[in-house]
Structure formats: structure tokens, C-alpha cells
Image 1: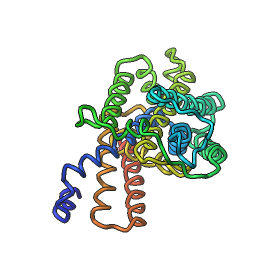
Image 2: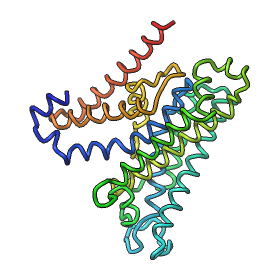
Image 3: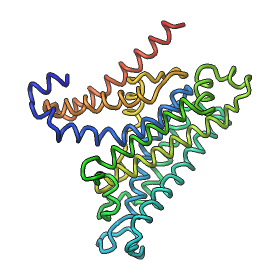
Image 4: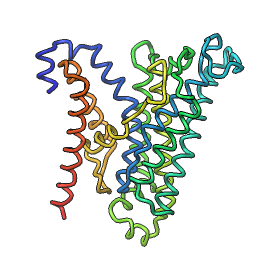
Length: 312
């Protein structure tokens, strides 16, 4: 499809478009990394997109220009030379808030034995409601340059910070999945939770950590998306959990648990983003783009289930 698009639109493989694809992939990869842990343990997280939106809105309201007329908190001071530290503090606030929701997800799923689909669907509505109440459904803008520079700045004027942050997250998650006891426990739970518990794995604690880690990554993703967009609203991140699930599945993360690699997640996100970009370049109507993306999601999961059945 990419080759066909390039033939029809030669600018598809231009340096500018490739950079744009990479910048779009970066935050989505971070979010998909969070979802992957849930899938590997035979769970899911339908609250991911709404947490992204909440983090973007929360960061936006705390990082507006001091002289912006529509400032959400008019009495928030000008931090002067300390804006960089305040940006970092706001990121930590976003992570902490989302981790609370992630902790609740983990407790509901592991201790109350609520199916992940139902539990996180309920959390999706809760987070959306919290975001509506917090922002009063008002669009947020007027961001300070110290915030937008996180996503739009470049190291040595060449390498986007957004790309470097995504790379760092990918490396950390690879290390966790492959080189730590937590990663081994995660795959063990996905393979056979009862066997993992019998062998001494604290499955409840591990699941809670997985959902809290996922929430922290959603917060980071939302923080970066807000900085990249230069504005945010309650609808930001809507449906991104489905994109993340599809990308993970395309990349080899099994919805049946126990299988998945970070490198595969990256490939899946890249494939899904290229698909969307191709459809845009070919002038496909937005409504049909959603249909195409939905078909990809269904087909990817159906193929994964068929592989699982064939192995059994």
C-alpha cells in the first residue's frame, strides 16, 4: 500500500512526511507499550485513550502562558527561569493521577476478579467524566513554550526530543520485559495464571504493577501529545486504546496472553500509522478511513485467535 501510495503521490516518501510519521508514531508507541503488558497477561485496557486525554488536559491547564487571556488558573504564578522544573513537576503530577486510576484498575481486575474488559470499560467512563468535570468541557490552549518544546524541540537541531523519549521508553520496557523478574512473572501469568501462582508468583501484585505502569505510560503519552498539538480537549485520545490494541496484535502480541515483544509493538504501531497516512494521501474520505481501521483491528485479532486455536 505504501509503494502504491508513493507512485500516486511521490511526496509520500519525502523527508518531511517520514519525519511526520515518526513523530506521530512516538507517543502512540509509548501508549501501546502500556497496553501490551495488559494483553500479555490476558487482559486489556479500554481506559487508555481517556487517560491520555486526561493527562493532556491536566498538563495543559497547568502549563499555560502567564499572560494568556483564557488561562485556566489565573492565579498560577510565572515561574520565570524555573519553567523547565515546573514542566517536569506537571509531568509527575499527570503520572501520579493516572497511576491512581491504574491502581484501581489493577485492584478491580486482580482482587475483585472483574473481567479486564468490563473493569477498564467502566474506568474509561469514570476518567472521561473526571476530565469533563475538571475542564468543564472547555478546549485548552495558550501553552508555554517550555512545554511545547518538549515535543517540538530537537537535540543538536536534528533529532526530535519526541523520538528520543519514545526510544528511551522502548529500551526501558524491553529491559523490564526481558531482564527482570517482573517481566518473567508477566509472561508466566499470560501463559497460565494458576501455574504461575502455584510456582510462587504474586499474580495480584504483578497485575496491579502492570496496570499502574500502563497508566504511567498513558500519562506520558498524553503529556507529549498535548505538547505536540499545542492544545487539548476532553476528546483527545478518544479511541486510541483500540489503535494500541490493534498495533500490539499486528506486532505479534497475543490477546490470548503469554506472547509479545516490544520490537513487535513498535512494528505494529508503525504499520498502523503508515496505513492511516496512506489513506490520507490517497484522499480517502475520513469516514471510510475509520471503516478501514476497524477492519484492520478485527482481522488482526481474528488472525491471532486462529493462530492460538491452531496451536491448541
